[in-house]
Length: 125
Length: 382
Image (cartoon, rainbow over all chains, first blue to last red):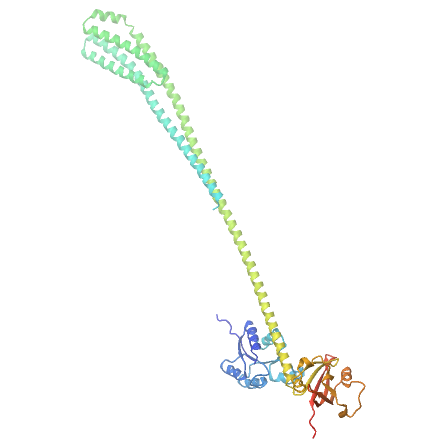
């Protein structure tokens, strides 16, 4: 009997430490993780190995996270997208604007367990 | 198998061996006794036959002598010689057979004496008849107390026979007792050996039961140990997992905090206006690079210095007279903004630069904990 296929998560962040920590944490919790440091790299992964979930920072080296998410939605319309950023938005902005563009918004002050809870919510077994 | 069990079994086998050896020795001894007794019985019967044969020979000899005396037949004389030889042989055998029995031996010797006396008489008669000395023959026969002598021999033979028969009966009884003793000894030995074998079986069974019990106890102890090891391993794995998670959380928190601080620093540093962060006492607690650039002083020279050491309101440009109360301190105390006030910045070399000053109270929740001052360089007027 084959083991159930692990859910694939694409992490897009220009900070290596953030990518590594998230990759270690999510791998430890049973996910297959592909890190990408730029929007171009994220697009390449989305084409070759479509993820089940995309977690992206807002500010990337070569793009805006929201713009990248918008373009990725054309390729992967059903894939949930999570925005994980250090830019603190006003709750009203999150409610009125970001919630329409992404499946989930979390600021980076959120704990890993909170992030995991959101991942599990977006990727139910 | 335990050492003491082996010792017990060896002990039992030694006892079994000892019983077998004892029974064997006793049986062999009894068999030897029986064989000796059998020889003795044969000899006794031989003695009885010999003494009765001797009596018969004496009578036959008397008859043959009388026949020779009457008929003078040489065959009767030859018969007498044969009878005498046979008598001598039988009495000799009887004497030898009774050599270990003093009483019987004595009686046989006595019998031999009587028989020899009779034989001597017969030979005297035969000799007289052979020489045709009938007078002598007549006188010998007249003086013969033949019947009496024969009766004496007969009584002695009967006595010897009777005694020998008694001895035979006694020996038969003794032999029977020996046989019974041998049977009892053999069956007792067999029974004792069976008991000892049963003892060996009991020892082995006890050892097997003890070993099974020990093995079961050992298995149970091993299972308990394995369970404890499994539980402990699970606890350690859980603790390790928890520790890893906590470590990751801590690293994540540090990383995100550092990121946040860096990001905030970037925001302030990216502003080209001069930014001062003040304490409630109007001392400088933080500045951005634009301040360093314009004032020409490094942060250590400015931090914890009063704002007034770098900036002052330009009363001339504001068109007002000197104020009794510092409006910036008052605005902070009242928690309100002051915007676009004319002010002068003096650099390290004493050069003055006109700026526009705005102050915002710095709030932590609803409490004013300091202030933010932003200076914009005033456009040069021609």
